[in-house]
Length: 150
Image: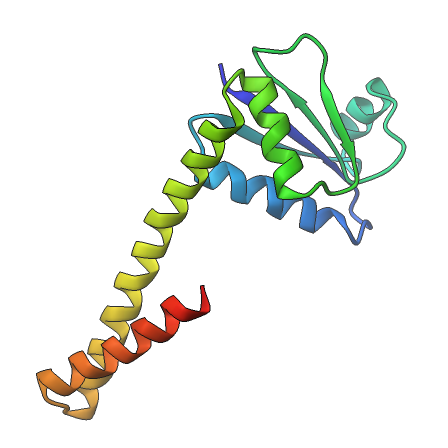
């Protein structure tokens, strides 16, 4: 069973989009572990859910999972570290294992970015009529700059 991360939001809340982005970014990295649900107070269903949990402020994040009997809650947007720790607790998976999965997916994501950058640089070079060696040189420079910034 997956860990459910429910993000309670309000249509007028300036901080809610950041909370949703954080939860969804973690979900993208470990989709086999968590499922993110956004619940808006702007809907009848959302308003009723917020009333049920006595939620008076947004964003609020409620986490439930197979390894815990109670729910874990955050008022406001937690740090990524705190969110991962709560997911770890709710899933019954060690925090190091969760972090490892997130890091592995970060590596995969950066490989995709690297390949995309490579193809864009190559196609730009082809438009300019550059030789293959010069294209490789440009790509190598861009790639090393990208790596230094990380």
